[in-house]
Length: 156
Image (cartoon, rainbow, N blue to C red; front, side, top):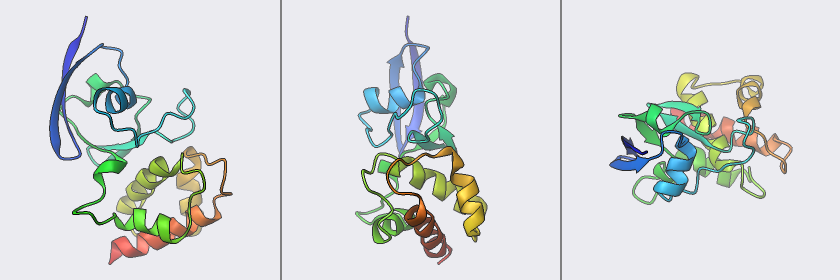
């Protein structure tokens, strides 16, 4: 049995037939080929799969594709505009906030959501807000630095 799911992903309306138990992360990766959204843990603890659903960060391994019916979904692939990186992506690049890069898409998506809710976060707030995103390489120092720089750039 399959169901039809329609949503807007990175500004494009998409409709696919999927099994009812298909997770949003599977839908994005397997049905749409959006592999920037990573699967890192299978337990919803790592944050590598964070996307925005109707403007709010969500671990896409925790919701079904059917639950995103009619929603606006943004993945890391949808951030750059006209060939120009989003300010948070640029801040991660400029501040060397990645090593292997596996956690980076989820970190960036979570960071953008944080800054949209709190345009001028403290370092303590950034560290607290990113607790649901795990990085096994960097020690977080440059990630926090990048989020602070990205916040400043997003403020203008």
